[in-house]
Image 1 (tube, one colour):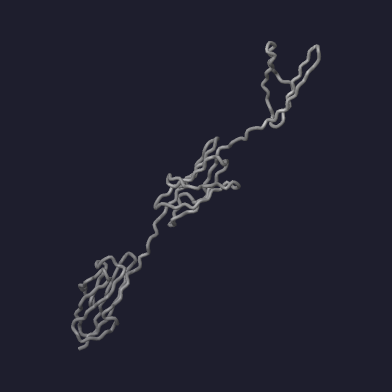
Image 2: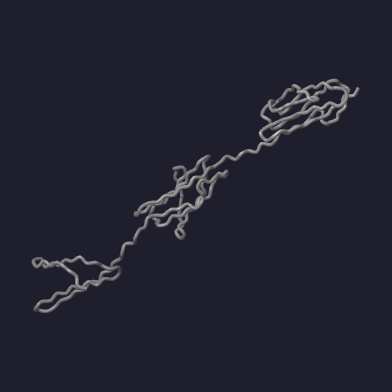
Length: 239
């Protein structure tokens, strides 16, 4: 179609601003006077610059505000509109994670992240010439609570309940495990509290008890945060 132009008769230069279409463009310059007509044609191919869209980043895993006792977490995110020369960064508590790569086909980013104790902020950041985008999640790493077993009590002396003796005094030796101190142990002889010695190095208590005629019950009780354990032995004093 005819286009407007400017022609300088002195310099013989013609100028015009042409609106090109994508692909092939044929430019025809035609001049006519009394002596005849001349025409020149130029074919120009216009390649439109691709439209660059802003990045869109999304974190699919782990879930925000989640809690774990594991030392690592599998990260899964997605970053669209990110090219080879664009920026993609993954950080944990503002520390950059190295060797982060994006799958060119599905735009997915996967990584196994080692967590810090407590609060962990994972951020995924993408940037190209059109702009940037960021997504973040918080995951908490809890310490594994050690299961404390209930106290364990074992009589060493006497080693069999129902032991018979003619003595008025009886040595008692027992082990009491899984207690913090002797304050967690109580010993009674026939229902009366009895003093004892406790050795934390080998978890052993020792004492002497006075015996009455007939059966005598020595009871050891031990407590900790997991609960309470009772163990008793009977000593029979014969006449």
